[in-house]
Image 1 (cartoon, rainbow, N blue to C red):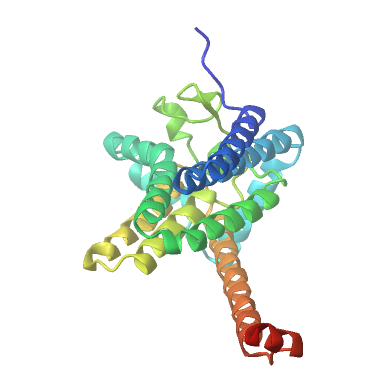
Image 2 (tube, rainbow, N blue to C red):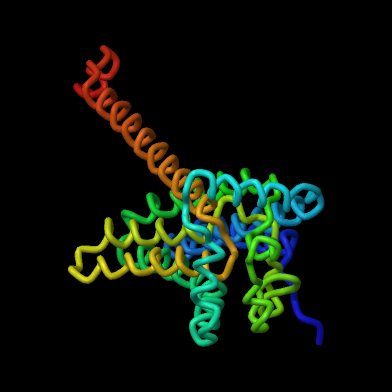
Length: 280
């Protein structure tokens, strides 16, 4: 039996099906089911867009390696630590390398989906804020990724090693688990870094537990992992966090504008017709 590959076409079609199911559920007065299907459709549509961007960037990848070289050189000029030296410090320890490869491949989606599900079920009033942040941040990252940039592991001449391929744990070059086709030339910016910081901020802002600060370990580990596996440069993460901050600023501005409109609507003088209606 052939593996089912979740392409951008099939993901988009599934998202449309979920939206249709959400509409039907709303018509038969199942608001909970409708909301769940709608949110699942939104996330799947975002995934389809990610797959599409990866497909298009691979088709126009003429200078992806040159851009990666330029990023690496620029980082060295401004004095950032060389990612290759960080990787070299870990490669003598196979267990650490395997764990890093596993964390990179699995925790990116698992933690983000877990946080979204937790907020949706337990803190529904905050879900829109978290979901909108995910959508805006990911969409902007994907727009930037239309310009293909190779990851550090594709620059062996600069001292990098593709440790995931070396240990047979690569998520690239084929379908992941027979389902997801991952792109190799979307290194800038790092959605891994954007999502891990976003997930940590969401938990800290939404939860009231004193243990919520433990979630900070996730972005710390993710940043370390994307570097030692040579999947991203420091600059990829910096740009990703800048985009996340932009998303927060956009949402804060939108909330402020809604607040002003709401206040203006509540405090405006009533018209003569409205006063007559109230008397009637």
